[in-house]
Length: 366
Ligand code: NAD
Ligand code: TYD
Image (tube, rainbow, N blue to C red):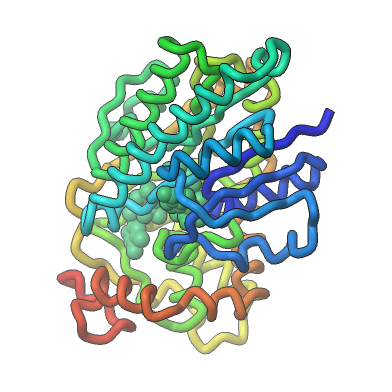
């Protein structure tokens, strides 16, 4: 049977892709998003005129609004993707991370608890609250250490991952204390269409297309595990459908790469996809800049549990997913233009430009 799902943060990167995937499955979507710099209605353009996608601009901390939405729309599931999500911004200014990721999740859980209690027994039994989290809550791995499993201890190192860890603990506690059927997923680094170009993959793709420097932090040997966003969305769907309340599922691409490998691979794909560009070979744009403070060395996710218990596995390879991603950025100049607002330029200058020239990373170039 089709479901009604309240998605928070559905105008962001993963949220907008998740909402599109769920509409393709004919689930009805109530999309609550405050539209921060990372939220963008253009991300939802493909759903214009769709009566089964309802967008509401609002804050997950607004309990009155959330309560009204739950009562009025009667969702079968809530998927919480609303968050502040960029590590560098959390280092620059942690406050909004505490507000949205911790306080916001708490308010949402409180309203969901009230709503869930009011449901008739059968619907209460079937209701799910999925809290979407990150592998970063587990901290940093040594080069030979085994990948994170669901029972790995939490050891967050940035204000971002600390705020996500706190919200995970709240979601867990609401199951154990109140019985609210919460589930938690911890996923590795995503890439794909509509990702805001402050994150590694889109930043490098757009800078390379424009012939701007590609700023690699530190020695470029930090390792991340990469997953194409649609594979993540499919995993979230699977957890809502088949996951066991109170449980955690790790999601990853089994695709560990150093940042230097990732950026070189992107450059090679760009050389092939836009061979007439005057910036070929794009890897000549790589520049090493000062490292991020507290930069986690390695993340790796062991996703055997979701594979064995729920039957999920990633469909895209790194190459096929990155190819689709680059093609999307090449095909959507209007989207790219729209996000390059004053606020984006301001961030790029603060983070990379030291008020000089946004084309030249100045973070103490080595
Ligand atoms: P994003 O920054 O692209 O989107 C977040 C969305 O949340 C935006 O649309 C924003 O407007 C909205 N939002 C922020 N504060 C809000 C509030 N108070 N009320 C309502 N809406 C609010 O982030 P993303 O990359 O799509 O990540 C979504 C979730 O997935 C986050 O919880 C993140 O921690 C998690 N995650 C992301 C990745 C990744 O690689 N991007 C990997 C693992 C987990
Ligand atoms: P990011 O996309 O910010 O994700 P996260 O920090 O959440 O993993 O960064 C991915 C990796 O790329 C991380 O090791 C930091 C590095 N990085 C750079 O080297 N240069 C950049 O300009 C950015 C944004 C990230």
